[in-house]
Image 1 (spheres, one colour):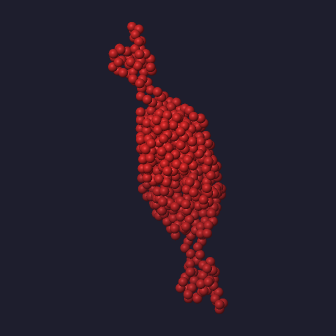
Image 2: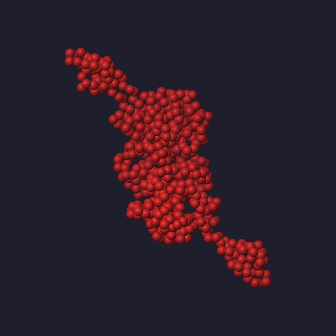
Image 3: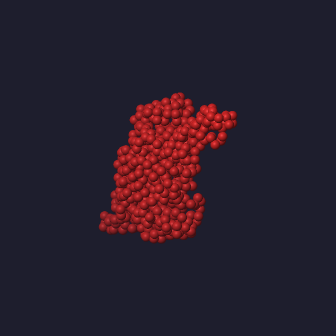
Length: 302
Length: 302
């Protein structure tokens, strides 16, 4: 599964039974936590998230609605006897904050917490099937987006053609990697005669909190699923700019420019109880848009 | 109203739709917040607490389940445009933690936050009708209980006797303060002939997280309502001691020794989904016991 589950979709003030930002990203067999607003561990209980499978946590920036749930989650992992290492990718000052909190509570975590400060754009995590990289977005304080991306997949074999050219199965792996096959009689079977192109890599771009910034579209170009904040409806564009947030139309414009497959919008301002207008406005610019609803899971399209 | 509303009654791990510790104390026209576990501001929404009327917040100790909701609440006050001063009574290290958090978020609160470090037992707040004082309890890290207490009230006048002795109404205030009345003919009307004793002062003792400690009973002697933690059932006394917590029977014993009017127990361990046993066990020792249930309000008996 390559998908994201929304745990919180509201902006800073929790209201209307909506919670501050947090998402769980599923990349095949791995779970990642992206931001961790207050109440995230309670939302994890509600939506039955298998939190012990999370090994990497990504925090976009240090406004409280994106991390005030983290100290509690880290403490609870300890109380639950976690021993597996945990990696935390976040702006540098978070490390001192956590250290002070643990020291004041006289807590020593029973697991190793690796703190990785976010400093420059690039790859944070390079796993067998995926990479996770960070990119800068434009907010009032340093703020990072995250791109979860499958690696290039091997070519697909064309079973019928393999038989036709009598290629031994021992050579299949090399075909998948792109090699041509040379038969015993010296004749060459070109790779493209017996393979199909692989499925394109799946990718999810989390654009965090940001003002409208077209450079983001370049950074996430071609992402299958894009999450972009839409704190305000379009008529509050000036308010959005002044708070370094975005509107529905701006979020949709970024998805359009990025040639995204699908758009998720969230981080709704507490001033809106009803969210219908968000969807309508964004769809006018980018049809394949969904509201990020708490408890819902959104698949990354291929 | 002299009463307390429970916002969270669970111990450290939020479970079974129970939340970490937080209470709102009503002392006539004032609201006080006592502890502020993660999710407190969300619980305030749920139970329609008039949070803007809170001017004083008391934090017992720096285990996260008693204060991880505080940074979010303080930030939200700011986002909501609070300008009225706020007083925060808490162990000293909390000040640096909050300063680091506000600095990382580049936030300047639009109201003045007065930080009062808890250092010794005694009166923290001396208002017209009440005092709030703190007392030490025995936990793994420095931990404080709080006693909310009405001041001595004036004597009550006996209307019939006032008439009988023809005492002018201009002297009533002095009668209430305990003076005798001297009539024009020099005869003395003794105060006790024309007054009734005042109602005893109401008081609420919040005993925070603590191991069984009989000295606490002395500190809260005669309190109308006592909140005492009961993290475990009685058969987990050894576990309670090792974690510096209390059992049902221990909480009830403190209430009995303190000659309390009524006992509230809370801070239930996540291992218990059903709480019936807590009430049964405590009542065996102290009959007038209630479970601290979230959203419920408990009156301080006179």
